[in-house]
Image (cartoon, rainbow, N blue to C red; front, side):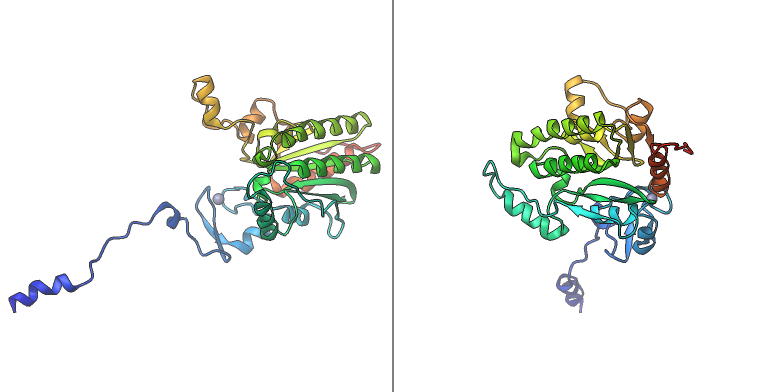
Length: 291
Ligand SMILES: [Zn+2]
């Protein structure tokens, strides 16, 4: 009897206390519910999407892909995509590059990290370029640079404003210097367009970094950002190491850049259409500002 008592426990499966990992704590059934990474509130994905992917509790702006942006920003049915079939080659024979691009193409159903085209916002014709951070982290290779350049030239040809939504991890390393050259190419195209009287509006979304922040993202007549967006050239740690100083907590956020004169305004998504419409209209003959 006594013996049994002692053996009983050993045959029983050991019970371990489970400590949820950070990842598990954030694990919310995908699809139906979404957890806000900022305030941790769990909400219906449907409601969140209805609210332009802005958290209903704290206003956190969730990333929007190019397609969602087109639907939410442009007049219904007005968008005509251009250069949609332009695809990357592998100029440096970088290992697995084309396979990675192909994988992202399958995943995102777009051919590159930027979607360009023309359409209208409240009846105002524009050309728009929308970067998509879900495709190769929105990195800028030759195709991204070329598509943006062509979009700027299209705006010039149509004599309509050019609006760009940026979201990028920077230049695409697999295309080496060819990626970096896109900074110069897009900048020259913007300068030409500007000299011809074209209006350029840049809206930086989270994250806009590296060569993209250092070229077309910052070259608008108006440079705006979404709340909380990370915007910067080099990463925080790299800067801290090179200047040997600790950087402020909000460094490289849209709010910090606005305070320091690098941005013209921060515009939240729900007010974006109205503000941009107003801007587009004041740049028409006889327009008036109602900011
Ligand atoms: Zn929130």
